[in-house]
Image 1: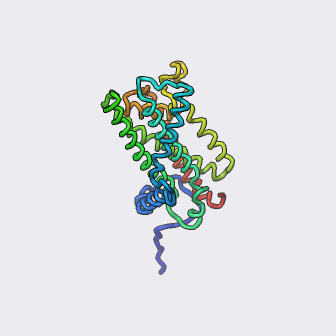
Image 2: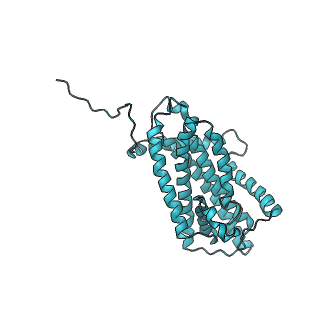
Image 3: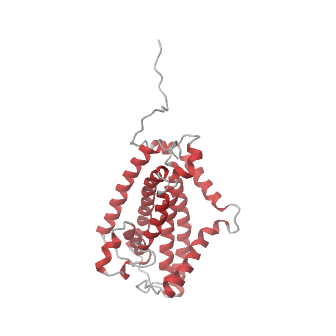
Length: 283
């Protein structure tokens, strides 16, 4: 009498939208190795090595100081040194931009791996987000050193209170939002290559309606709602509020960003799980 065998894995033609998060735990060693590989690969055979993590935002900082502070004269408000204001915006925007751009190219950049071996596809974008988070942490250390310098030698008076908790909260939701939107566009760009061109332009325009080079206080109050339609705007203001005690963000604005991010995450996971397995033959 033949007994029916129970298989650990079964490959079929149907796809599920539900997630088995235990698979992520089972592949935790792969996740760790991918993070390590990605970090080392970016700085091999370079002159500055990991110092590029600091050199890139510092070079951008010099450009912003010359253009937006000296030439255009955009006020940063509240007697905050422009160096601190711009550097905080640069590192948080770089975290979002690099995380989103890398996640949006998940299938296109990794098709040579996906077509040869199976593992949960979500591992790749999660590894990328973790890698970008490590970069952000290193850049935050430099920002803390700059804050210390201005506090000790430039008589900068900052109010460190419970608002400091806004820093990890803002970073968490910015990372989650970049992952969510990136997963959605990873499916779209795999199906329609020209969307990648649209994304490149849209991400540049998005920066100008995000408080990166200007504070929300520099905009007329009647126009605040336009910027606040961008879910990133309250998070950037919360980030600076936690760091410097300056920023315009209400609970309602933060709640809007949080709800928008969570809805985007659910939609992204559904789309990524439902369509991801079908894209191998399309890319």
